Amino acid sequence: MGEPKIMYKIVPFNLENFPKPTGTNGSNSLTFFHRETGKIWILGEMLETNRHFEDNCGDGAEDEAEYFAYVHNFATWLIYSIENDKFSYEKIPIPTDIKLGLWNSLTYNHHDNLVYILSSDYRNKYRKIGGVLLFCYNLNNNKWDLIHSFEDEFVPERLIYDNEFERIIIFYTNGDKKIGEFYFNDNSFKEHAFVLPHPSERGFSITYDNKRYCYIYGGFDRNDNCYNRMYRMDSHNMRIESEIIVEKLTARTFAFCDYIEKHNAILFYGGTPDGFGFVNDGFIYFIDKEKWLKIIDLPNLAGGPVCVFDPFSHRLFFINQSKFLPDERRYVYIADGIMVFNIDKIISGE
Image 1 (cartoon, rainbow, N blue to C red):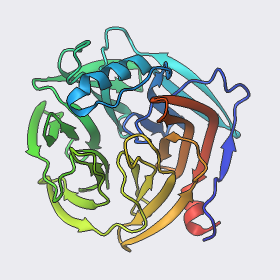
Image 2 (tube, one colour):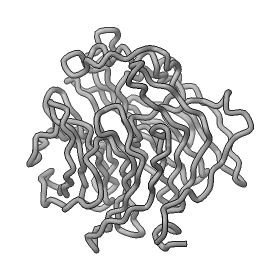
Image 3 (cartoon, helix red, strand yellow):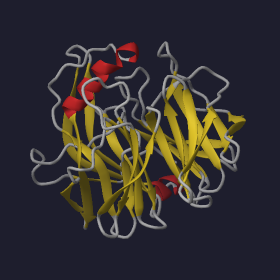
């Protein structure tokens, strides 16, 4: 196939005034691609990166929450347009009566043009949004609705919309890792234990094949050990059906992960091996062939980009980068435009 390469890169005229999109170590819990308009949507922007982040998360999660409150603004949408190899952006403010917390995860229902956002302030002593809230944002009329308020507090890790059963599947943690099913027809909620053959607790990369199976990769345990293992889970009963042999990847957590329906394959990119550094390579796992293919290798990329996948034309977008400076104990933001990868051409070797 030859060396993996960037298909092309777009750099705006003025990078200094370009917004800073939010991202969680490259994961796609805050992004989606809008097919009808060809635009990239990202929930929130980074406001400040000069504050030092003390590494006392876990039992000191309140300090993590304080840091997130300082650097993230979840009161706006960032929308990126790409036309003729040029891109522009706009900001859409979120109404003040829509209170999003510090821990958010979204899923896009492209059948009805709706975005579902689960929002929480779990273990945040600085402010509360009033429990865990499920919102719906209607892209047809730009209207917000509060769908449901959950009784228990938890941190949403990943949301998946399932059109067949009109539900969202929620991977979350509240001290223990769990899976929930929220059904829109009657607002019912079913909770399941999230049982894996290894002690990973958080930071999973999870995608759905739009039919029945969830694929779960990586994660870390309470001692910050990363795991290089992947499983297939049956979403009809929330049980692990089989383990998939992982090749080529190194252990990581919070990797970007999405499903490519045309190839019946899973796309992986990036992630972190230690919570702060970034691994800048990408792979595809072909489910039918049980084969792994390395597609991207960018060792000189300074930080971890915000990733968005276009599931319709199979383009992978990288938007700028964030980088952790271990000596200074803080993140910096690197504005350098958008990298675009055509996954079909990379697979075919063009």
